[in-house]
Image (cartoon, rainbow, N blue to C red; front, side):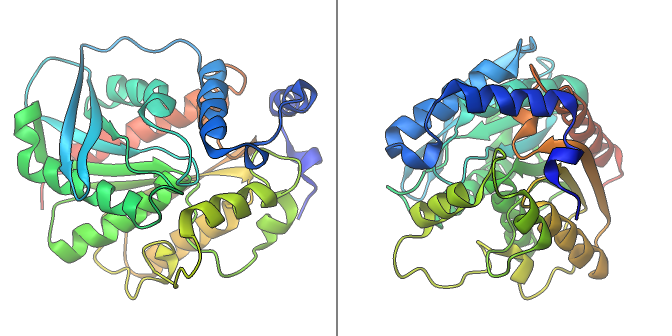
Length: 317
């Protein structure tokens, strides 16, 4: 596998140089509360201007441990729009509605669908599967009660990036098992297994945006002591992938997770699931949150929006 330095785009390399020169301590060397603030500030500095949308609504969804904060962005004031539930990334530890808002607004405008994001519970205060429990509760609520916020919960897709991609993959499996409708699962560089070290992990887990130390820190916060193997954290190892919703898998070439993203695409395809895998060359993990410095991010937002639009254009089963 080629060296990351030889693969990176010029603008990605420039951004990484700026991050290194900034002198800020990496997230895994900060207290959790400070790491959350740092991640939010970093995304805010890299996201660029937010799209105007016709409607923004804050509301709450009943969850297993109390109300789940949610925000909706819609490209029109029409009711009955299809809905895309987006689950933010951040290793189950950092991130929130604010850190995915730039992308969610763009997807809403370009897809024609309403986009809903939630603040699921974070670790270490709430260990896995708390984040998944909240995510599936939100999905179920949108299916059953989406009309109360002006969306058609029977035309629904789910997606997410990084840890949010993990959650989206597991929500798709749980939706199948519960017999709930799902038009599409969007998995952007998801973490779908932790039990083997891939070649991309070896090649791209040092001196890039997501490194081995940060991954270990995220996992330690999310799992805690005594965590047992669970397919919901490693959807690659679910008992069956047959009958799942079609998948759009977006990957970054210089990302420790790129190999397992490809593996998950292969597993889904072997199970008869329609799959599109798209790899953005020369970019790193979390690039979709860096449009001010990495232009490929805007292209990725558009690709997600097109996949969502196309999924809802298909006739209902």
